[in-house]
Length: 318
Image 1 (tube, rainbow, N blue to C red):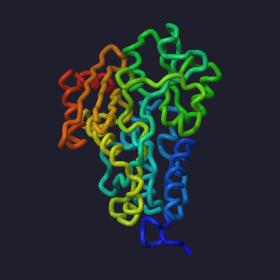
Image 2: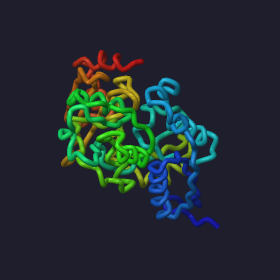
Image 3: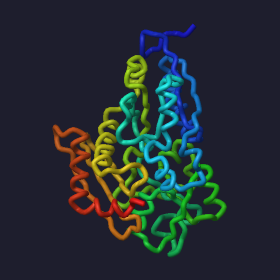
Image 4: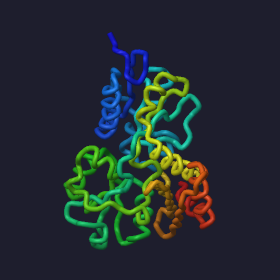
């Protein structure tokens, strides 16, 4: 017989939907373990998404075919059909606006949001020789780094963390760029040489954060998940996603947005780059007391647009 969940007076039995990658399963198990500590019974169902099924294509090509939710569509279908009760996503993979049946019930404390320089033979990005090859599937990363080093060659690298690290070890590139959070979660930091400051390589909106998505009408599950929500992280990523939405971007455009709390105050930084790296605009703002996170993100977007971000984004449209 199911014992009552510590988060709810009713018996608690939950099913999590997750992609099947090593990192996605780490994330799902991480949330499952926290829920089990509260007395819930938790199972995980692996769901193959469109983005996973199209590994032979670049992210840009997949995005052109499935413009919204390439890594979430099938999971949301299972959620809507009540085959699962919640989904654990990398927040940066979620569209900036969810369809009406769904809500983000909890955003746990964020891991390191910065991008990482990963290399076997070179200690830093600056140490790479002219003509060196860098593997990354992200247009955001390519564009910003090209603005700093236009003498490097950027290669399309897809696959999970282990696949990309294997390609690096086999000499397909001199370095790769990965999210620090993923490397830390999988304990694969052996070749992590440096973490880029946001003023050099601004992270994707929501990077390093997890989002727990549920049906908006599932009050019992939402209440059970409330204890996992971190107010500081939710403020930061809400501001980031508001800026991204105001710029009209998704996860496959050359936009970086990063909101950070320090000594109880939030600041937000943004960057929009031309795909070639030949043009880039940056802006930064301090949070003013009484301003909502959404208003903070929108104000940053206005700053970027006033500096010419729109013309740079148009260059990224196929």
